[in-house]
Length: 343
Image (cartoon, rainbow, N blue to C red; front, side, top):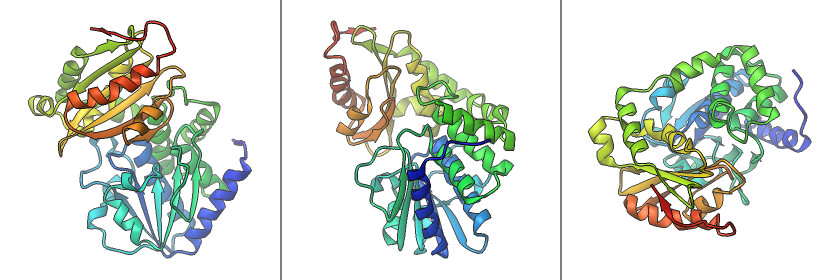
């Protein structure tokens, strides 16, 4: 299958390939709290580079000390990932995957700082990337799309294991091809990956039909708290630390809860909050229309895309709501009747 050639992208990927060629040791790391795109793309990138340069040394790092989220543990190579905090090497090249901002590498930032070179492959907007080479394409549906196209540029065969990782990356970041970013390029690449051995049913069974009973109890609590603002155009809910203790659910199971809150009819913008260790709250934002939630996330110290963004703030749920709801309501300030709470 032929994909549209992007000359600027090809040039940027060629520069990254040159850095790999010039390096003996390469470390690959995705962002803290990795999702399916981060993990799938990082694992696939390592497989691609190993296939092209089998004589070089590669290590896949986890930004956090937490294990790979259970729903992604089926991905080939997930069991080989090493916590960055335990890695003491000085790699010739450090590759940031699905992240352009150093602090979002968490423990991986220290490895990146001591690496001799740094490259980035990402689709989150970044005005001033801190790297020797980078491909940052905000219009790409997922980093998995970019890694697949990198493999094709390198002449690397898309093996079933590579395809499984990249399909997870693309399918999860497009919400099973339901979000606004599910463009023709994403479908083209997904088709190529299924042809190469990716299984949509495998992804569904592991990621979307693999919830623990504790998670379902937590989801019930979250759904029971859904509240709307701005005449129903903003929906929000939250999960506290005590909710997790009470249900037995784990933090890494919370990622999909924003979609439950997002499903409210008439809601254009969604906020889901969860308490995390250290007296902090992590927020997930989603938009179903042209409202840009990334500006709200950036104002709160986070980032992301127009339709999907996130942030982390100090404090409790009430403080996080006080910080996030006013700028969300302001997104509708030019519309009539954009105020007021509706349970």
